Amino acid sequence: MRGYSDYNFEGKLAWLCKRCDFSSTIYEDLVELKHELELSLNKLRAQKAQLILEEEENLKRMHHHIGVGIRFTVIKYLEEKMQYLDVDLKDVPISGFPAVTCDEGIVCEDLPTAPGVCRVGDALFMVGGRLKHTEVRYGREYCNHRETKWLWSAPAPPIAGGSYTMTWTRCDTAMDSGRSLPMVVPLHDGRIFICGGTSKPECWVEIYDPEKGEFDRRDLPEHIFEPTLLSCFLWADQSVMLYCNRVTIEEEEEEEEVNKPSLLLYDVERNNWEILAENLPASKHNYWEKSNLIYVGGSILFIIDQASCWFVYDLSAKKEVGKVDVRVKDGKVMKALYLGNNDIKNTSWIFYIFLPDAKRDMKYHPTFYTNLRYAKVEVVQVKGGDYIATVQFSGVLKIGDFDKLYIIADEASLKRAAEDCLKEREEDDK
Image (tube, rainbow, N blue to C red; front, top):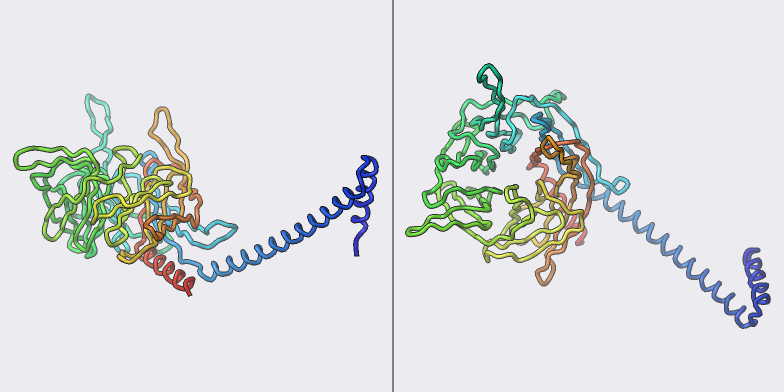
């Protein structure tokens, strides 16, 4: 049964055809076209309703696979004042965005700037850095910063008793060299590998044992000196990979200066150095900025310095084997975290990347950044060897202004998140 609106439309159409001297055939064609459009519109409405139902089912399935998310500590500096944030980032879709819990706390102001920071078990360690020093000359006070040899430790958040004040305790033993911006890597046995941050070849590497409170000091070999260190990561149980954008190598009869990105492999147990590769892809970031090299197992290394363009490097073939285009707003990645194990058979990997949301250049002050953008990205190696990236989540952490920032992962949280992702894949494959 047709409604009044149908007759009203056809009446107006008949009047228009008569007024414009259209034939009855044109009138019938227009009426038929209207009916076809109505049928098409009804089909589109039905398809939309079906898509809504499917989306609801997808959300139910996603909630069924709610991940434990990741937990990490953010330590940020602003004008030499330090603050920490305990961040719990859940993969729960709420209005299209993940849920974030972020507890803030205060840290004392008399701690160094530009230290190396890492987590070992339930403790954070701060290594070296620059401490403010005041001296009086000619009756006036002058402030400068000096590299420190000390280490500090603190309980990792959340802090017991509900306190929001992080208390750092200086360790009893000092390093042999003062260091600014050293690289620190926790070893599997609980020791801390410390390197760089000093131009001295003597004790360029120091290994700290928190249980014993002792340092094992190592010198650079005579044929390697003045490495400019950009990244450092654990390669095997007792081997560390160091990424330098410049290193000087002295051979038996001649001296050669290598001014391209180079990988050095250091065997901690045998105290042996090896130059592994000298042809890594060059990123667009500043020559002196730190780099994000993520080892994912086998011989695969991800270089994640720009948010929208990553590189894949094969350590066995010693060449670039892939480029990953990521559909996010570009920028310099401050930190990349990998959710997974180092299984040689993996063909898909999940990462979190973090980068400043905004940059403020001040005329008489250092550059400040505001808030952190983040994205959870899955990379899959498809048939043919290409790497395809999918952005699963993205958002902004409202952490305020900072001029220096550290993101320290909770390894137990990363492990749980990796196991959760593996279970989800297995269920999806069923």
